[in-house]
Image (cartoon, rainbow over all chains, first blue to last red; front, side, top):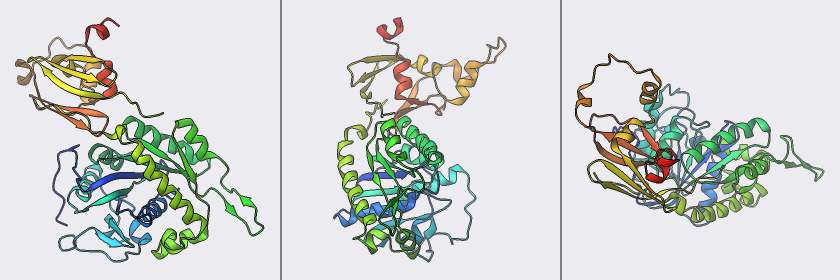
Length: 276
Length: 110
């Protein structure tokens, strides 16, 4: 990949081979957004779709470790995207060592994100899943202004502190008119050895938020220690243990996302232009 | 908090001085270019509008000729960016803002 070229701010990026671009977002960090993005992308692939996964978290990329990419690559000689477990991948973590801190202001984030979208040959994809960083800042603005987004999935955990920030994410997508495909609640519950359901972070936050915002509730993802083990080991749970409840939830989620993207096609139609 | 469904279906230039937007609810908006520039939502123009008028303000060279738009381009699914003949291009006109500042006879009355 050559060094990023300067793009006109807000210039729309054409991605003719990519049918749908789905952002995975949250207001708050630490809710498992990268885990959801990775497993959702793999679930879409397991349902027979051609899928790419773009890690838009320039400051704290997680996709390399979750997809088992431990080395860094020379941007001038490596033909990105990489391919792992059948997904096409791009992340800042492929270019810099994990211990390197990216101390950048917004324009540099914009420059690299637009380069990841426009200068990488993604080829033909049914879905490009974008793992957004937390918050409502530069990366989110760049992607909503320049990428042909089909919709966004909001990830939250059940407790109020996470819902507060998820509401901000919802409001941002509302303002920039990116349809919210739905809300997914991560870390909802676990089933103990006694067979009972335990909800350590509270109950019903995700569904409450979905009702409040008038968007679909996509489901609850249970807590399973194997999720973290698989993520750290570079082989996500959907791929490694496809028969677990967690994996089945992701496969259901992928099916719903496929249906929702089709439903939202009218809302993401390009705005008319005017030649002066 | 659902995404607004109001959106333009066509943009047209009428004569030399105005823009027409046709919306999906059947409304036809009119805007003089001068009105759009006065309503520019960028931070700089907003601040300028909020200041008391300065009687000793010196006109900039660009203000001596009528301003014209050079290009209008969509931003994502939610706004248009207008680049003006004096180089000003920092205002993003959201669809809601455009609808609010409509100058058609019906909206002007309200």
